[in-house]
Image 1 (cartoon, rainbow, N blue to C red):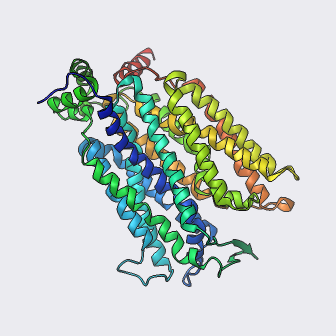
Image 2 (cartoon, helix red, strand yellow):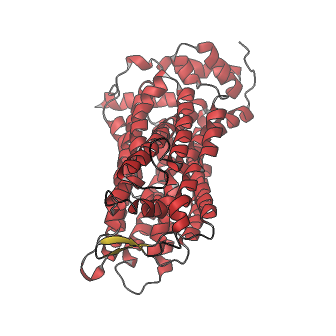
Amino acid sequence: MNYTEKGSKLYLFSIVLVAVIGGLLFGYDTAVISGADKGLQAFFMGASDFAYTDTVHGITSSSALIGCIIGSALSGLFASNLGRKNSLFIAGVLFFLSALGSYNPEFLFFDYGVPSYSLLVAFNFYRVLGGIGVGLASAICPMYIAEIAPSNIRGTLVSWNQFAIIFGQLVVYFVNFLILGENSNPVIKAVEGVNQILNPEAAAWTTEIGWRLMFVSEAVPAGLFALLVLFVPETPRYLAMSGKDEKALQVLSRINGLAQAKVILAQIKATAEEKTEKLFTYGWMVIFIGIMLSVFQQAVGINAVLYFAPRIFETMGMGNPMVQTVIMGIINILFTLLAVFTVEKWGRKPLLISGSIGMAIGAFGVALCNVVAGLPPMLAVVSIMVYSASFMFSWGPICWVLIAEIFPNTIRGAAVAIAVAFQWIFNFIVSSTFVPMYNMSLGDMGDKFGHMFAYGLYGIICVVAALFVWKLVPETKGKTLEDMTKLWQDRKNKK
């Protein structure tokens, strides 16, 4: 074996760059629905064998999240048995197949362009397939980065994964905007309780082909990711836990230099008897905190905004909702960078607590705009931006950092899988209930009641999330992954 006396940051960053493309695909795949939403709905409203209601559309728009639950639940099994690298390759292949299948769900079995219940099932199958890829990538990308990065920059590098997720969403907002071009999105309104397309001729291109092009655009970054993953190494921690100490030392030496690599390998070996440790070896609290971090990241409602942004801005009276969506994407990028550059300086908990408070202010601001008549629409738009930006420097990146850091080595694979599975379960709950909840009507308020209720609920959850972090979540800044084993063992022994 050839060991490197001096570590290379260029080598480290090149590996991390490949891994974060998985995060980009995560963002791309989950947010592509924001542009395809109306065209897809109009297409399946043309089916003659079933009624495509708001509830059915909510489930269809969120069907990829069912795959995310499956993928994240299986991620521990994949990561432990196939390795982190091979699992990421499988995720890339699933992204690629999903993009092609969502573009042409009629492939082999159905007549092109003829909507039906069976075709809807086929479309959802391909979206679930991509969701499994997202679920794998969402758990394993931050795990891969955390296991390969030096402890002093681990939080920053894992935060880049969240940056890639948000960047992927921004990219797909731009791609959707460019694909739509001068064409019109369908205008869909309920007439006597039944949804109707008010501009079918103007929106014909979007209904027939526009949404398909949005989905297939993902095939390009997905194919690139699957190819590049073949060239990155397996993580040293997985190699060491698999008895491949020499390969682990080789990778560690290229990153940290040989002297430091030997120290790190010794620490890994001291805590890496993965197969002999049960999930609750360190007590139930560490698992509970990991799960609740995931639950709160979704329960605050952010993905209802990210997935349905054009629809929300349209109800606020904005002229071109796709433009506001792109602007929101740019703001999200900037505030994610704030977290990337401050997470090692300020710590994880202060960012989470301040972000929760900012989100609550933004959510309550949107709710207020739907209660008090005469307030300018721009106030609601600004409130949405504050809400979204606050998430991007807090719960967005920091939740992933903590999930990658907080668990002891010996249970990390299984614990991360459980935590991320809960994240996708609540993502699905929030995303599939948003459209029906947002459109709820009550008396003279009409559907403004639904708008107020949704954001009022999200604001209350943000306040509870801040209290949870303050009371229960440990600070992990500056700690090695091996330190977490001692922290949780000490907490268990004190009880």
